[in-house]
Amino acid sequence: MSHRIPRSHRISRRTWLRGSTLAAAGLAGTALAGCAAPSDRGIADISVFAGSLPESTPTGVGVHAMVDHLNASGTGFEATAFFDTSLGSASSMINALQEGTIDVAVSGSSYFSGLVPQIQAFELPFVFEDLEHARRATGPGAARDHLHELFEATKIVGLSVWENGMRQLTNNVRAIHEPADLQGIKIRTLPSPIQQAAWKAMGGLPQAIDASELYTALQQGTVQAQENPLAEIEFRKFYEVQNHLSMTSHVYTPFMMGVSRRTWNRLTQEQRTALEEAAEVGRAAQLDANDVATEKARTVLEDNGVAFVDDPDREAFRELGTSVWTQFTDAYGTELLDLVQGM
Image (cartoon, rainbow, N blue to C red; front, side):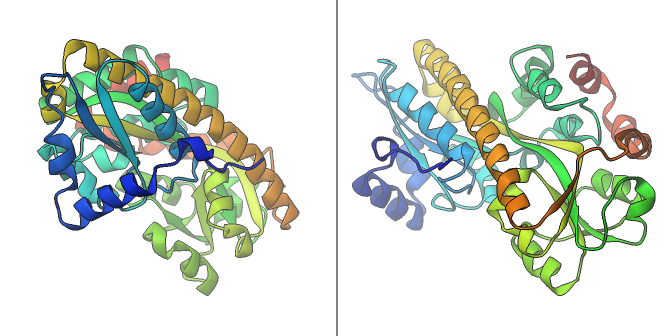
């Protein structure tokens, strides 16, 4: 199924050029967030940035659904969606949110961990039984409420938690059924000490490599394995350099959505409620689009010769992977982790 954004949802050329020009001049967020204060007419002109993600992704679908809902809410919003690096990189996004030069943004939770390190509880190896468990924990409820409370000490207000999805293991050496099969294989991991420790415990030789360099690293043999959600594996065409895939579902990657506290403070209560509702509308659209993209990705991967191991010994991987949890709990306690597991 195609994921082209409907023409009616696309940003107009005039709007896009306006945002790009302002961003290039270093004034995009200032112009957008600076107008966030309700005027006499109650207008709130805000930017909604997909944290450097492409418009064609499930997150793009979610952002468009959110913006459309805001603009149709009758609460005075004039929201505009931005993608890729039109408002900066995902790393610079965090500073821009704190400064109020970007109003609303969504991106991988690891980008927010410098402000709220407890958010890493959602990305611990094998913390979730399955995708539905992960979605319950990141949806409305006690775990997400506590996460948003942790953000109260920052300059960002938590709005919602979206997703990148469950991560699966690929390699170009052999089929991986159990941890012993991973011995001696160089694997690219997320730049997280906990993730690297987990893969070392499971038998791999972890190396942190930037995502932008991963395809080349796999092609040249710098690493022989990597792990990502199926849709990401298909989107980045890793099937061209990887021919084995194990459905380990070892880590779930959430996307955090936040609004600048400066912007939040300028909104009326009615507008705040509309923004929270719109974030949930966007989440629902993004999760649905991610399901479709995941199903499509499996077909593309199989059509390109990738051999799937659907039933690896997940319990054996879990036993080794969870042994590194103490690196997190010793530093940050178990309060959020207990809520996450109890959902």
